[in-house]
Image (tube, rainbow, N blue to C red; front, side, top):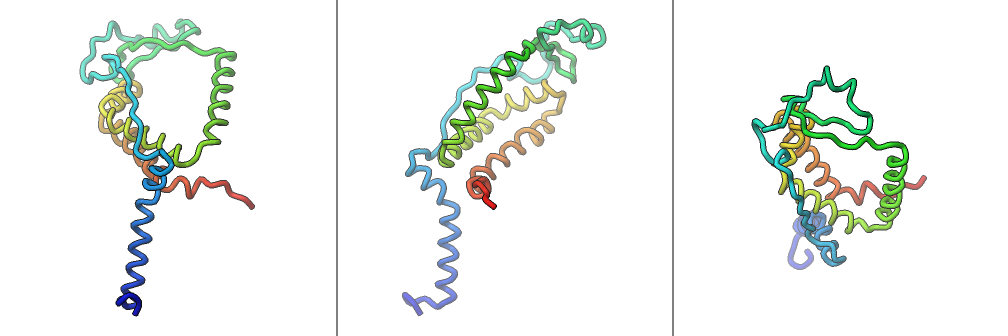
Length: 180
């Protein structure tokens, strides 16, 4: 007996302590490193992004008539379920794509220098944003893809939140560099 505990009681106490530490280790260490909690993100939405149901689109997009003659400088956007015309976005040329790829490479170089505590902070911020903006995300997913609301909730929200949860909890362990 140690400290008045039997060997089995001591073993159970050690296992319980290890289990509790595994659940609290990251939040405690992240807090001590200055990256506890999560940040906030504010995003202003447009009416079409936040209103479900019948929309007051200015017109319907006639794919048969318009697609073949649409100017190559932009890409038309429409709701595939209702054919409501949502607008257009500029089509990027080679120079714009090359510039975006260069910006992404620079951002990746900065990201590579970040600690996993910083990355968890960002992932928790993204998770918080998704939870706080579920309605808008589902509405946009429905308009963008023609999905039903339940398909958007399962296919967009649930999957994204689970991937964020897993990466926050286990990512550091499984994303370490491997050496042969």
